[in-house]
Length: 423
Image 1 (cartoon, rainbow, N blue to C red):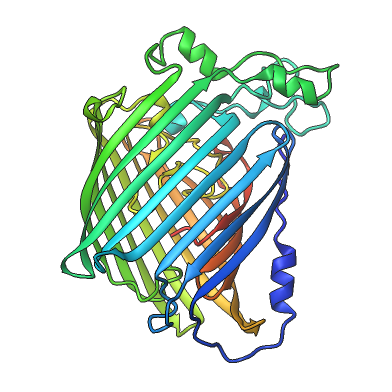
Image 2 (image 1 turned 90 degrees about the vertical axis):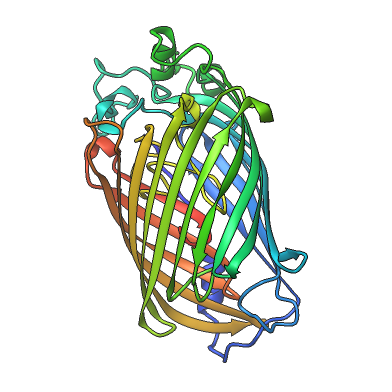
């Protein structure tokens, strides 16, 4: 049903056609950008840009940066959009405290929703296949191309602080955040206005059915305010934050959502993420893995917040999609307790210098898996694939990943353009 095409070949080709030169230490500000271009048969044509600025100061700690700004602005002609700004400064406050902030307004005309607890909620591809020429089409089973989706508009604002406990490797983290989420039925009128009027999309969705029969509580059905306080610990021995070749990075923290901060819901999450990096060939080949686990340990997480995976860097979504299990349907498996594993080999096969900027190109080969542990009916969801990445000055990294799901219940495949490595 959905065809996605992401274009970063212009940037890749410019770097790969250049002649190799010795890498030089960077100082001052470095600016990188890449166009965002894609097509989705339901969302429409996407256009936009991602820009990143890195300040390397006097270059003494290169490739580590002193400040980083990253901004994305993109739109789908069908109505969805991304507007966000990210800032990170490892030693901004008093020369010792790291400040990381994010602000974004995200609109999703078709936010994926497949029910709860992974395989406990059956996914039927024929429900959303509307064209007779598409594989799997069944006129008797077809419900709506928007069946596994709801409308979502979200403001996301977070600020985190990190400081040393015994050394820069062992740190505390504390942060505040606000998520203002509004959800509703898919806007099929808007979809129909740009699609074939002779075959309009029916106003039928799993979300609406679950609201009507009470499986989604009435106080959660339209979204709400989720404001939180986060505290935890980090142990970090990475040799390079942007693409480590050795070391480990472990973090554990609690996130509590409370009316004392203006939240409409009261609940607490425990999160653990552990990543480790191994050099196989110096500067060329590495093996990496990431283990993640998150569980609601008090209260009830509202249905629309179940996909949110906390970290010390950014709030991601899963299980499924570009940030967790690549090739699996986005947010296919959500529940009170979720765990996942990513494994990946990264090969930096080409280095060059162009316009006094350091570039490298890399290939990645990955296997991702995970499940909802709070449901005995769920079991492992897995996918595999590969990616190609281009890095400028070690920190501005553009990636194109392609993954394939192993189980048809998780979809078929996915292609993703993203900034930075997955972890």
